[in-house]
Length: 395
Ligand SMILES: *Cc1c(COP(=O)(O)O)cnc(C)c1O
Image 1: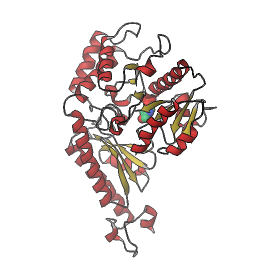
Image 2 (image 1 turned 180 degrees about the horizontal axis):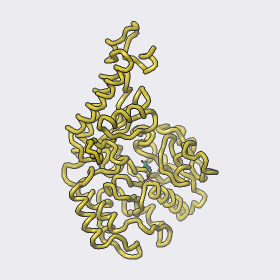
Image 3 (image 1 turned 60 degrees about the vertical axis):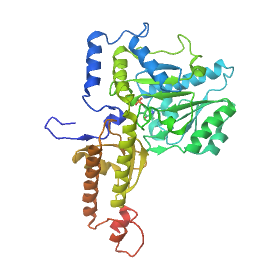
Image 4 (image 1 turned 90 degrees about the horizontal axis):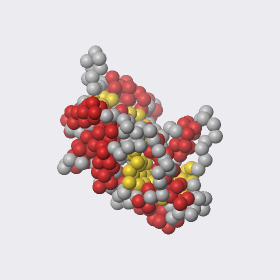
């Protein structure tokens, strides 16, 4: 990206994991321009071939049998919760309305989704939280089992928690979620709004775990920057929704679907997801080396595919600001983590350059403290191991 005055930025935020094909991608631009010139919107009172094609392709490449299109991630999650409740009601369990979510989750900003998110900071000032969501610690199967009641309808979990610092679900936890849902007749929903559409090197992140959900939500990168969300569901869940059960005016309009089809053309092209995985692994190794070189500034790097978090020892906002000044755009997340979510078409050279910028930022911060902090050999206090914290350096 370039500013009006010509400064150059590497965009490793991608509009919060949205601009999956970068900016000005010829195929995406052409698809949007051509569709806009024909028809942008008709409403789903009519059959929309672009939407049917998109739905067919998503179904062909996933566990799902049906797709519903929305305009955002929060709206997709709302629909997912409605579908879980409706399926339980239609199966004779109208009392099953509650959804188990995890602490540290992020599910969006509507009234119900701030309740599902459960973060007090997002609920504050907005009155009584919407009822129907119970929270258990992420990756804790004992706590999850203990939280199941006769009113539990299903579970909604992110395979990798994005907003709270790129925290991955344990494989045993994911497998356990499927088992517990089968055991108690619950429905398993994954919020793949951030992890889906190729971000982790698979079309959907749950594929890494070999666990089949009943329903998932996607959004963010699905249409490469055009606002769109989707719910993908198995027939078991989707069949309970009949005409009139749910709806949307804008969702699945021809323009959004043309954009999403153009994005899918790239993501499903042979070798594309392999390249995401390979470039992602390269970025991860470069970040791990960065952490080793600057242990006083960075604590660890974690992630998968092109979804990485760099846990910082100094306030992340400061590091992000310095990186921005040096030409690298990134996103902050919880747990003092700097999030790196480059477009899925990013190359190794760009990853190298991004990590070099972070290295320069770290060097500046180290020299500010007046000492070299390049690992245990830099210690002058006689203690062993890398320097642990900013306070310790100053001390
Ligand atoms: C961004 C995000 C949402 C909310 O999506 P919006 O399009 O902002 O409504 C929900 N869940 C996850 C995991 C997200 O990352």
